[in-house]
Structure formats: structure tokens, C-alpha cells
Length: 240
Image 1 (cartoon, rainbow, N blue to C red):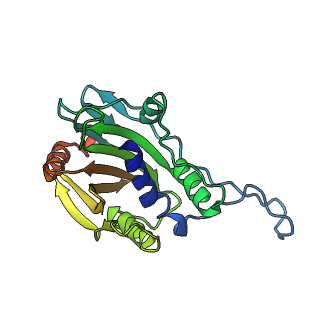
Image 2 (cartoon, one colour):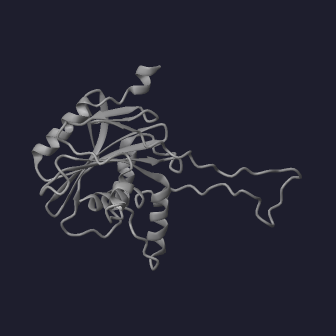
Image 3 (cartoon, rainbow, N blue to C red):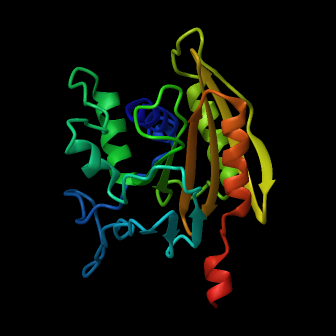
């Protein structure tokens, strides 16, 4: 289940941004370019590595991104380092690179650089049939300055998905918006075979916070919406 969710995140983030990734400033002046004496260039610096956040019991807090989410006691949360947890159990969450497809390889490398997996949470015990799963991730948007909000983010995704060859049962919605509690989100609905996915996103400080929820029953989506209604996305405002 986790691998399916991650594949969806990859398809809807790394691939979606390929058309608008800015080229970094070179760290040295190319040979043959005429410049004034003493001219210097500065290489574009990537953002510092994003903090993974804090998990205390059933409460996940990310101070830098300014939010916390409290999960019901029945939910199972493996821990902060989701990738380490699954690697120790023989699962590889990162998409494998196809060396015969240079574009895919470039997309995956960009994905690994820009997307930080923050947390995975399960509605029921891991392995339960029909389980619902939440994956929280954050994407560095510094190479996409035109993305100002979550609607821009999903609109760009949809534009790129529209150019992809998808399975006949793969459907995705238009970009929608919904206020849950005090927070406004943009979201997409995706269906593939018997699985459904709801992707919520909000953009702040140059990052897209993505909450990808995979479920089978509408009751699970309703329960997840209640969790977001009670979540706090105003931590920094309150701490000022």
C-alpha cells in the first residue's frame, strides 16, 4: 500500500514539475563569454534540508512549516523516519530509475531532491485489508517561483498529467478548494481500479505541504476530513 501511495506522489509531483524547473546559475563563468574584469558569479544554493518534524504519541508537529495534526488513538504511526522503517522490513519506497528512460531518470532525481517524506499514518493495523493510509510530504518549490498557492500547484500537476499515458481506469478531478477548520486547502480526487485518493495541499514559505490519503470507503475520507478540521496550521502565528 505504501509503495502505491508513493508512486502516486511521484507521478503528481516530480513529473508535474518537469516543464518549469529553472536552470541553476553556473558556479563559474563559461569559457568564451566576455565579461568585465573582476566579474563574479554566485551558484544558486538549494534550501537547507527540511526538518522531519516531531512525533509525540499521536501528535505530529512540524514547527518550521507551522502545523500539527492529532491522530485518533486507533491510528498506527510507524515513526518519523518512514523510509528507514520500511527499508528495515525489506521495502524500497523510492521509485527505481530506468536507465533506458533519461527523462524518467531526471524526474526521479529531481523528485528525490525536492520532495521530503515526513510521515505515514494508518487508520488500522498495518496489513489490515482495505486499510486507509495517509502520506504527508513537503515539496521545495524554489525552482518553481510561479507557484503561489495550492491551486497553482495542482493546476500545474493536472496540466502535466494530461500529457501522460495513463491506465484506462485512472481518473482525476479538476482542482477544488475546501476549508477544513481554519485552514483553506486545494485538493484533487483520483481513482484507479478500486482505490481512491484525496490529495490535499497548502503552500507556505516556498513549500507545498501535501497530504495524500488513500482509502476505499467514504467513511474513511469523512474521518480524515475531521482530523484536518481539528488540525492546527497556525502554529507560527500563535507563537509570535
